[in-house]
Image 1 (cartoon, helix red, strand yellow):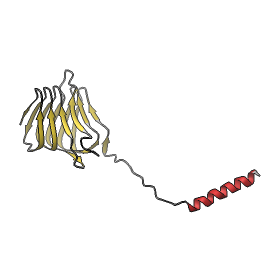
Image 2 (cartoon, helix red, strand yellow):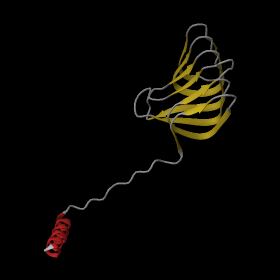
Image 3 (cartoon, rainbow, N blue to C red):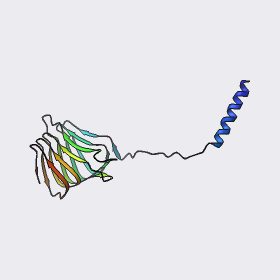
Length: 163
């Protein structure tokens, strides 16, 4: 009786599999060339980005860390407005810094994002193209030269910008 039951089950499964609609299941891979998650720089870290850099996250620079963009295109792969940002914060007896020489910061698709400077953060920017907001809070200091393609600069508190 067990053999007969097993045989009937196997035949039913084979019969059902003949009528099941066969579909191709799409396979999606994350590009290994896109940095996944937030890039966090802290301590006395100095990070240089040159060439194309695609990121699916925010860039956060803390303490005494420095981010250098040299001949770079930084592309944020956002799915909605202001999903990601670049933030310089938590100086803790340091100075989070941004140094830019010939760089472009964009978002794909063209969603808005913002660059924030908090506390004792500073930026030395030359030839930056960014079609988004740069906002300086507290005692931040920005020195911007030869960068006519910055869309919006906002200084709040005791922050200042030399343009």
